[in-house]
Length: 177
Image (cartoon, rainbow, N blue to C red; front, top):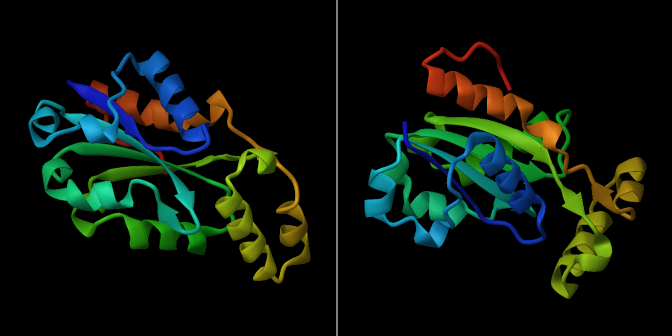
């Protein structure tokens, strides 16, 4: 089986996960702009990584533009975000709002913890974080937005790596993510 990894990131967390996946799976990393229709035709499965910025995947537009090209492939989508597993409704909304229906059913979706280092944010992103803080009513959550977050760890990839290994071995999916 011929697979590849593609991702789009802004502050390095998604790139780090893609690099770890490349090391573990020995698959090429191909940037989205380099994945033409012809190149995609030679790929059986694709790992797609995207961070979430204010509810939108950075690869949202790419997913919609290439939905027809990837809809018949096995897809593993890893979404890098600060939302927690307890925020199921938020995660479900991210999926609904960003992933076209015709590829959503072909995806196994994995949410991975991200990184927000406030001093590394662009001016615009710092302003957006402040705007988001102003709209949060939960005091603990609001306070947490004042601190840096860095939970990017290789072990978060274990469920995704298992799922890819099962797919490559022709084993049915045995666990839920």
